[in-house]
Amino acid sequence: MYRVGMGYDVHRLVKERKLILGGVEIPFEKGLLGHSDADVLLHAIKDALLGAAGLGDIGKHFPDTDENYKGADSLKLLEVVVEMLEEKGYKVINIDATIIAERPKMAPHILQMRENIARVVKTSIDDINVKATTTEGLGFTGKGKGIAAQVVASIIKLI
Image 1: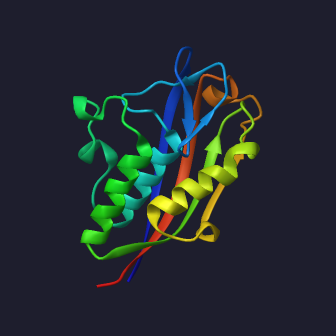
Image 2 (image 1 turned 90 degrees about the vertical axis):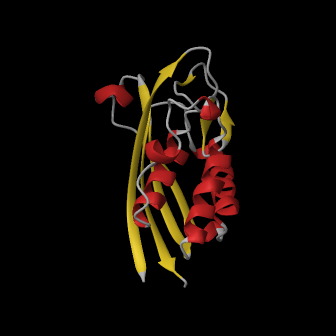
């Protein structure tokens, strides 16, 4: 049985925070504000995978009111989501993700993001697609106030 999930996340850009996307620290004068490392790409991926499996969302499993997740590494939390999927008999088939940001340029970092994600979700890098786009100066992302990510993920039930 094949299943598909969709994920979306957004975080505000602020000074004095690291910018981490897809588990990659990207040099930039601002970073994303959030309870964890605020990696919008991985947050959207986790939501897409959880949604595909009918397991709720990241707020249910990793609430921002829980101090255990303060500053948490989103790659490690993605590992937990993959374990949850495996317990239910699911395997990731593919992930297609879009980062929405005016700056910084994502192209130099996308291969490392894909490698990180593929390793953690236990699939081939060929099954992980990450792309980036701008909003041509429109909206909060266009004004440089935040970064968003949209993801579609498919999984298959093995058991």
